[in-house]
Length: 451
Image 1 (cartoon, rainbow, N blue to C red):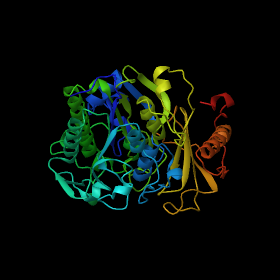
Image 2 (cartoon, rainbow, N blue to C red):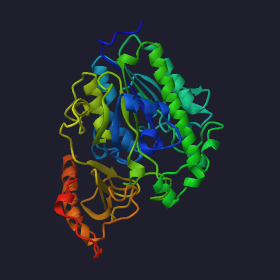
Image 3 (cartoon, rainbow, N blue to C red):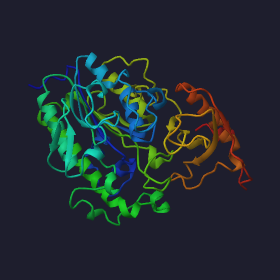
Image 4 (cartoon, rainbow, N blue to C red):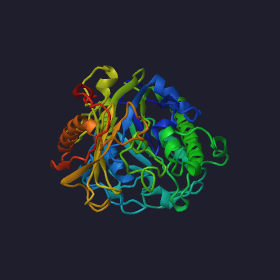
């Protein structure tokens, strides 16, 4: 029997992999890929400016499970297992009397059939550590609580959604926390392609492309149509899950978070799809619906992935632990003028050892060239690498880091980045200014910097 809305709300995380923010209609995509997301973004709470804190799969997932930056969790690149001693969302919800379930891609363990000790405290389990290696788009294989391989029929998005609906139906009488982690729209590694359901690629062939991809090329012409087809099917799955909640009279007592681990730049910024400070890699679609979030409208402040775990706990009436480095956005939902940080902070690894901040106007990034990507988590010395004026150049096509007209901007952002690094638990490094030359433009005034 369904519970009343006076009880602790259920919580579901609908988590996609490598989904750009501008696949959604509310972010300007004209192709109608996400009617369910768009509808809820208007009706509930749309986190308009949402960003990953680490643009690669494993580290971002560790941060979303713990509410802590990647360097703090120790998962600063793919292939590092989350320490079993780390407290995750599952632990906090279980302590509060919730039953917990995980379905899909984990990417925080050492084996495909994830051992119990490496499951982050989740009870019901149907997952694979690296789902792109254990399954294909029409051959979904995951592992259950006893480590047995389970084949799920149908297209992979649908197979996972079916499993999620079965979980919801079986647990509707008790408060539950369910994390549904899709591989899609991530590429299928073995064939380096974005594989949509049959018939879902053709309608988007040669259609609208985001301006950054149109300008830079990459693998966009080869891959974008398939990617769009997958996004379309994900939104249909999101709608199916919402329909299931409504049919079980759980929709008014269930919080649903939709977000992604990072975006996709289609080999325009480096040799693959992510691991970059650019908007295409770090900005993600995010909304929250359910108790406390209905009618929340558009949140314009800059929200990081590490802010989402404390938000879910806060909304469920669970005390946010001091170990979490993010902050709940509930004050912003209730009062759009509430105090909030002026930037989001990024740690970047694997492709490089880098750090970055993003304000409403500026993107500022540094790199440690003497520390090759994938071998070191951090550095004591960085060199300025990128500066973008997002107001004039939203698609980040002109790097301003070498122009002396922006020296005051860089000096201000340099100090803000150093402060954010220390706040995240890093030892304060040195940042070497980029070599500059006259830009032939006026110098930016100090009052234009702090935005």
